[in-house]
Length: 355
Length: 89
Image (cartoon, rainbow over all chains, first blue to last red; front, top):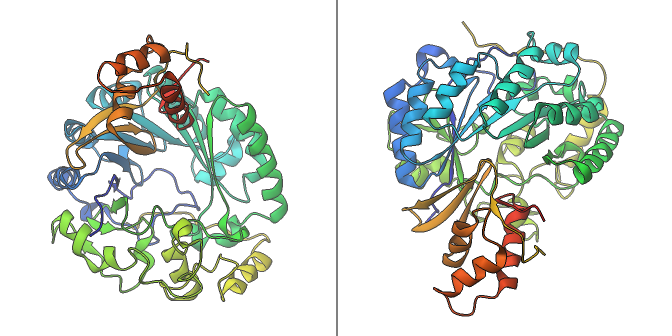
């Protein structure tokens, strides 16, 4: 039997003031009238906690877009869970943050698009940069630990040194530099976002130097298309984490909506514990029995779990295949073709919730 | 390895809790959870920023047999690598 999950990613809403073209939310965003209501989210938190979840990541979209966020924070905090607020910082005021801190937010993750204000606003699709500076100051003044998260891609990778310096000025305790992973809007915009090999080489050097001297903890998420081995599927499919989408869909990972015929179930229809332990979606890629060659006999299978199931589906049409990023995948040529052809200028589609 | 005179404390944004599902003490921090065994839980509980490693080992010696200051220092070093505890040394 599977073990209990540790973390819940609660995507409270897909509404967001930003329009970042690298967003990992699905192309088909959940509309406001389809979102779980306050009582339904509180029930999700109760069920998740009873299931063994210790850490709630309140995310989106922009969680501050939910007017009932204070109530949700109080409820989740009352369960004794660790509360991580994942925000763009837009809409954050001193009063709002102070209220959320009192209600039990333990940590804030703030997104930043770039260190160059003009380019940052271009990437976000709205004027956001100045709000980020204010938000970071408010978080620091509230005494809350701050993680700055920056998604890296062709349009900002050359500025990584400046981004590290900005995060230090913001007083971040942690900095997550995450190369774009190509799901949802990011996959649609891949041709505009894929960095060049030379960009990555330079950035890797800058990050390595900063790690050696910075007081911040710097987490660097690799650009997997350029690697010889795939990134691990979380800690294994249905092993430690689950995601609840704004409409109550329960997902093994935030990208899993892309896999057709997965049999995704909803908290409005079935208890969370049953979905975690018994649903076909969560059992589809648990353990190692589903694997084919070259994964099945591979020494790395317990390190990377065959890579990402969602990526395998997106690029090869079958989620049980080896992640084609892997140099051992018979379909690696598909990734190489992308790297060879998608590094020129390309238009960027902005993320929008359908009205 | 951490100096025996160091006075470890919990890192910023780190919380401890008892998890009834796993019947274990746990440490919760921004992007992770550590499930602690009995000894580790006792050490973490004593990381108050005042006690030295030597003090912690002496205090643990009252409840557990064979606690060496070096073992406590090694555990603190591992916890510090995860940023669960901080030491100034």
